[in-house]
View 1: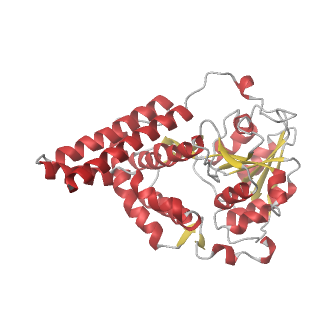
View 2: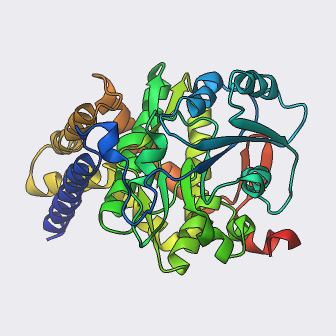
View 3: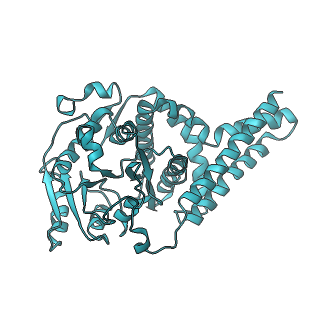
Length: 387
């Protein structure tokens, strides 16, 4: 009897996995229409309204020049760029000043200073940019996002009367070495896939990499300091938008984040940090994540095979192939980084994921860009300025 239960479990979650791959592949499919066809957004009097792009920056990264320069190469008629830095000694400042000097129209500004409105250093850094933004459409964009030329159009086109925020998860690109390919396995067809599935089912969650706001939604909630209600500003954004009776929507295709070389330590720290943040903000959604990887169905298949008199390792290999070969095919069809090693990175990811999932339950503290942070009672730690 238990063998039948294990086999049924394995079949159910495997079919769910294949369905999620198909749904995400459809949701992120390459669309043939030209840029001009993607400009109008439903419900907007002006299909290309002026936009303020706020980019918090901290420290130099391998691809900083490419990602920050991309902000000035957008094919959009009217937008401003506000770079936000907390310290006058930050090594990113000379690069930002160089990029600003190349803009004859004076489109960008560099804002330096710290506004401790929350325990979240990124939100504190963004505060001055939000306050200085001239326009009613505001984008908060991480420094490692590589903006395509139709970056703003891709977000605007997703707005509807019931949408208060449009965002994008990161798509790992330009991986150098096996470790970076492993991070692509986490970012792309795992985390981005499930986020796009949730969005396709009308349950979109915010992702802090790129967020385009209807400014009035935030101001009605008390201003950008309202995002200090959670230790992660994207979790706070999701709840703020839903409390306003509106939805979070994702762009049609995720925006790229160049990876370059990565270390296993950096990947583990990033993934466990995100796990702890998800658990702290959405524990009811975090709990079933353990079923999203291939390890539980592989174990169930091995148990069922032994119960039915078959070779367990053959069953494990079959399940792994059914899970990871279609994933590689979906990534390849979408034009996402894929090599002959990709199925191996997916398998290794799924073996590591339960460890990270458990770590997400057991740990509260983490470091981000040299800042010690915690998910314990994040709302209670908000300073008076965020009230």
